[in-house]
Length: 222
Image 1 (cartoon, rainbow, N blue to C red):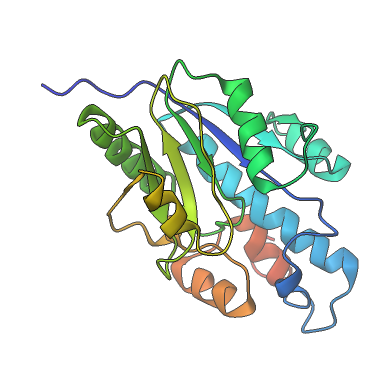
Image 2 (cartoon, rainbow, N blue to C red; image 1 turned 180 degrees about the vertical axis):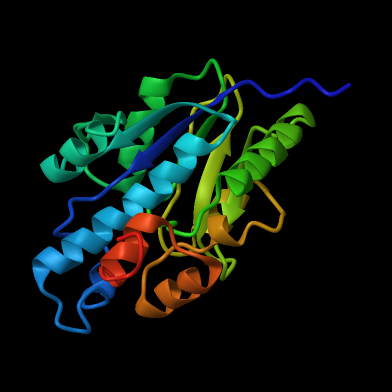
């Protein structure tokens, strides 16, 4: 009988809202690009991602890394642990900072914050696949994005430090660093949102309530 995995620590960096998701500017207000509307959308993407993480059975401690006071206040208000950025700027450094707080005694996952169609069951299935890879000897595993070139999640085995290489072409970099690619039908986990087209596809999969209500504030339930 297979030993069930221990709880995964999980780190999610969230950029300052005024700098986040620049290619989505205008998606929340019919192309106007008003800063407040854009900030609401960027925050909603993070809210829905984090809500799915918190509902996943396999996640233990969640750490959000953000220097944005609005992000920190909004997420802390719903019980999320938020820590400021570390001394070195950048997405990969934010992942490293959060991973150091989580430690190496258990498995640690680094997740993108722009997955508004993510389902808890998808995340649990991917973490379980990562654990199976670790029991077979892998030290790290990753989930590629829908295009197959980027990375939406990187997972490291207990006893090993997280080695994030997020950015353009990150799937190839993670693969070259020895991470095993996870394979599964997890459309919400693979659909990160950088552009209006990405958002449209995520909407077809089913957006979380925060993003859905930013885009359609008069819809039922909003």
